[in-house]
Length: 559
Image (tube, rainbow, N blue to C red; front, side, top):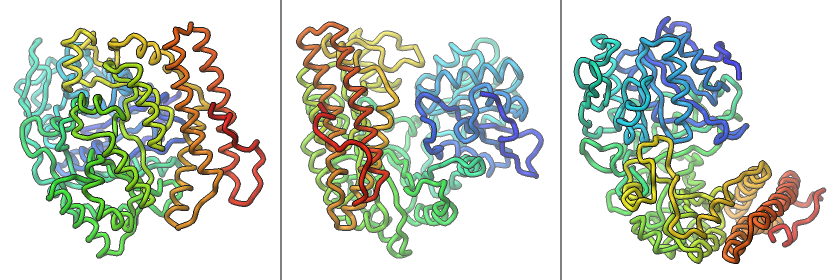
């Protein structure tokens, strides 16, 4: 893809050389064409904080600008900032961060290159050891850290910093790495400026759909063994879960709703990006109540999505109807597994029965829901547990195909990764881009996993149809109507189709089926998926009562 420099936003009074350019790469395989541009709050908070300190900041987002890695490099080289910052938000970004950093350094070796983000934090030493193009890694929260690093740059020679900077692992003089120690977590989030929306504005100017995000707090009170949310933002100490005041959050929601939600390009549901929006403690439930009261006092109804756990949904059952009244539309619930032994292995402090109870509550109030972080394949599970997991996900009633094939990801800094390394099941602990290159304890489970590592465009078409069908069903429920029977049937058939295919692979592997037989099962599944996607898309295009042109739904589409 060719760089188009004119797409880079530039205010009339912008300085000729910014102090910082913050870059968001895009993995074109992970982000499908037509998907809304995301509103990354980390970049927004960094830009807001640096500008408050007097620094000139520009942001480049590959998705909003439709730029590949080479295009981003060309933009950065033209802007010629003092510092470029890249976020290693997920391991899908890793190869892009490397390519962009190398490209920029090849053209402007004097430019200071910094990586940040959760995965960069826990791989900081490996990054600096393996990538000469990276000068420093920001550890944990970055607002104050990046400002202090910028202040130190006038004293930095090409060979590295003269002294450590708090919250940074950086190259020093010679071959030394300078660790500045970890910063204490930011205590007063209300004192932080609201995140700037450069990327939202960028997407709107380019005519691209975009979502709007809000953050009410930082951190997590739980210690799930596959996750680092409990530690990442408090590496130097501080409270594990900090919240902005409900009034400040509602101020931001009201302003963003007024500014953006009337645009046809903006997704109508605001995204709350907290790891956990609802909690179980007295303090967290009081916060949620005050939030609802503030929304009600202002007579605000703003559709929003949030993430939560089953126990928190249950603990806030009495508040759910009021949350729905002020706009709660969808909850992404972290269920992770339908097998209680696996939940205990993850230290989820939860059970499959609690998940089921929370699902029933969401259904009762017309809240759409998703299986956040569901892990179908765990390296310790048996074939029977895999089968139980598939059936549980089917009955959960909100699963796309991705959830039926997801493997446990072993992220750096997590207890499970360390455990797998000790057991000799995970090799390549220093491999920055590796999160699931492990051996399964049961070779039959591993064989099933191998035969789910494929993708066909028809699956995405069917997933999108499932999403739209769920939305139509939820709207009907909230209106007190029964909705279209074909929509309900279609949702059940899609879940059944996904589950039946996985169960078929499990049974075939258990029976010792050869590779050609497994390949034939996959080919049949893809053909059924194409048929079902075509029928569902046709149903969704036609309003209730209008005749559909495609073949009617029937059970054979899920067999």
